[in-house]
Image (tube, rainbow, N blue to C red; front, side):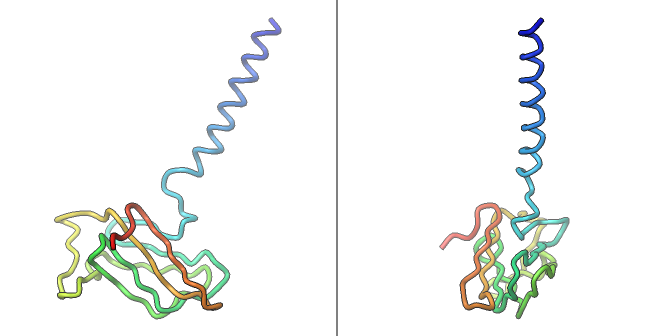
Amino acid sequence: MRLSRLVLVGVLVAVVLWTLLSGRCGDDRRSGIAVEENRVVVTNLTGQRWSDIDVWLNTWYRAQAPALEPNQRLEIPLRVFVTGHGQHFDPRVRGPVGIELTARAADGSAVTLTWGEGRRR
């Protein structure tokens, strides 16, 4: 009887830990980058203003924004991303596999966020 109680307590602890930890994995909104429907969503989760924002999609496609305030959300439709040759991203051909954001924080430090594979250089 005592052994079965210990096993039951152990199983309950394992289930509670798994539940708590699995909620933090997967699509982590706290990373600052998410892909929702046909757009990339960037959220500034820091306490500083960002400026000179470049968002790279699948290495070759870029979108830019001048600034993003703390807790502000930037939504970029996938068709807005463009290569240096003027080709627009077509989500019907291939979906997003990597996103990298670079920016400058108000204190002058560099900000870099990645989603998926990031950006190859």
